[in-house]
Image 1: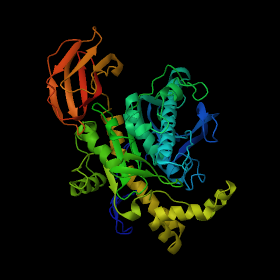
Image 2: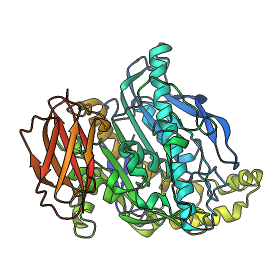
Image 3: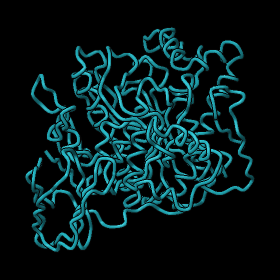
Image 4: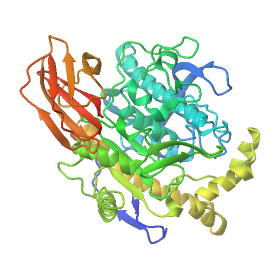
Amino acid sequence: MKKNLLLSTAFCASLFANTTNAQTRYLDEVFPSVTVTSNVVYGNNFSVLTGSPVAQDLKMDIYEPTGDTQSDRPLILYVPTGSFLPRYINQTPTGAKTDSATVEMCTRLAKQGYVVAAVDYRRGWNPQASSQELRAESIIRAVYRGLQDAKTCVRFFRKDVATNSNSYGIDDTKIAVGGQGSGGYISYAYATLDEVSEIQLPKFFNVTENKVMVDPAIMGDFSGFGGSSALNNDNHVGYSDDISMVFSIGGAIGDSTWIDPLGMPIIALQGEADFFAPFTYGIVTVPGTGGNVVEVSGASDVVRLNNQFGNNDVFKTPSITDVYTTRADAFNTNKNGTYGNGGDEGLFAFEGAGNGNGPWEWLDTVAMKAEAAQWGQDGDVILNGFYTANPVFKALYENVGYAAARARAISYIDTIQGYISPRLFRGLIEQPYYVSVEEVSATEVNVYPNPASDHISFVADHNNLISSISFFSLEGKLVRVESNVNAANVVVSNLDLPKGVYFATISFNKGTTTKKVVIK
């Protein structure tokens, strides 16, 4: 299939053709059609969409290549957008697993040979809360519930492999999670959020009510276990929710300090002029809110840090060379100094204000208005919001017609697929991504005092001796190493480091763990 690379805001002049004839499974669409199994229940948990917690089934649509006989296929979870509210209720025409772009992405990935699950998740938050603090608390909890649901879905598939003869024919050692918009937020969190302290930073603290915004003792842990029985159900206990890599299309990460050494590969695509989520660092605004929500980091910051920590090295050797990568690297290099990327691997930026906000989305305005009315929503208001975010789509739709407007959106999906496909292939098939050493649970190392000034202690289990400790700055630069330690209790004296936040990677004879430390 011919695919197009978007190069500029000028639609007709912005396309490169990739005319490679060789067809390779997981790189090309080698299957002509897919089979979709709709509304498969993968779990059950409490939604707050109506205000009071109500248990609901969690559902997904599963896409498989039609006629495929292979039974060890990599799995991709695709998490749709929607501002953490249902379609139309969120004042946008997107927000369901049946959105046009979601269906197109899942279909194409399945045609490449993957098993793909379009995963619905719990929605619900209060965009009209009276203060920025309350809006932040509400949406952060929504992201947290979405993360729990994505992990529940991964465990569903692993349980199916173990107890149901692998009915979907997957290789459960090769799983990626990706999403667009709010699904991108969930994907980033899946890749990076692994310590309770990371969701209890000062920005995530409700000062007015003197409480943390997300309390795992109430909401359950990252995997969705524990918490209040009135707010959280345990799903598929005893199965792993580990994955290999993630990709995000137009999302953002709650805080850049979530990105650690020994993290997983991340592919990030976003509009440089995205005015809902910042491309670098800034405030999130959500359609239908009463104002700004919370400070986050976008694709540029995420990929820059992930590269500095070496987490995207799997994409670099050998180099991926195609027109999509060439285009991405040219942007990153040309913008070096503006964003500080300098060609960082894994970042694709869509340039121009007209391409900043979901240009891969499309809709039939007549059908949308009719469906919105069934939900009691004003389709004209929703359409105007969509047109504001996608002015080029509006011009094409009104002046040329639906087919041309849809073709523009499809060309963006061509580019998205063209950029992520070789990287999914690299991380799942060609060089399956694994952390090179077993990571020891961070709870097995106590660090004190933290914050520290002139000295800091690391205490491990006496049966697991520390061999070395490496200190990294937030930018990923190695700033100090304590080597040949071979002790369970290590005191690092004369720190001699500038004030700030650092990552200490503690290595053992078998395994590593990373702790965040603060020098005051």
